[in-house]
Length: 363
Image (cartoon, rainbow, N blue to C red):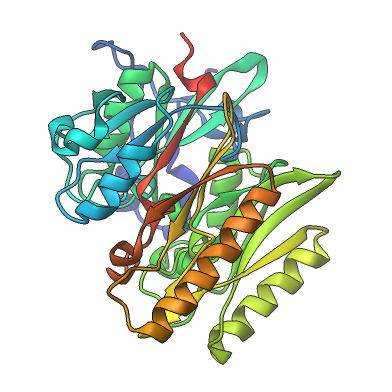
């Protein structure tokens, strides 16, 4: 007797215990550079055996960014300084990038998606399998996220799998061994699913070796783990994590607990003190590390000439410390004007850029 195909939401829908949840199981599509026929749903556990989520430090051939509608100073500093060998996919109208994008290889993706400037949160994850096979996994986020994921999958010609979990891309960090780290906000936003079911689903969808939950940074709007933590690769035989520190006692205590957990797991933990003003944690873990033809670190810079003297002096000092650390890790540092971006409460540079790995651009 043949087995009927099971959609990827099944393990979660069963946990919710309702036929309505089972009815929401997502479709699995076969994307391509042009319109292609839809494929039948696949069994998640079987389809992802031997697969593993890619970390951010694989060689990068391009980036996905949003079409700016605000934060002009940031986008000007970004597009003026992005390495010109990168392919730049824009979620929306490429002409919005303006003259600072001259010389970039720009290609629009899909429509002008709502809030797609936070492209990391909206974009899918790349998962690699046996024999160099590739899949994209799209989590539920907000209006436009599924459309953006499908548009990118169509362009890259990689099969897209949809997950019903509410999970923003900035709230998941993977290391080089397939271990993933998320903040507990993910559990709060998916309360209808027991924690064990959520973890099983993440292992099946992403090929995750382990799932670790960390406390979010207090009084920070996103609750994302990438606000205070970054995977920095393997250095001298050890996996390295960059972790923020804070002059605020409550935040410092949360970050100390996170550092202790990582150290017990065997990671080398490098600390970077936030610049903090007005209650905003201006984080340097929000850097974007681009490897490949050149190793480049896009590092937030929070000093601005119009700040009060004491605030500007602290920002300048913290900016220099962050730039020294990323240079010591072997990167050419490009500072980005991100103060207004972080003040928005929705993130900094890392939240606005999704790496597109060279392997994903290969035919």
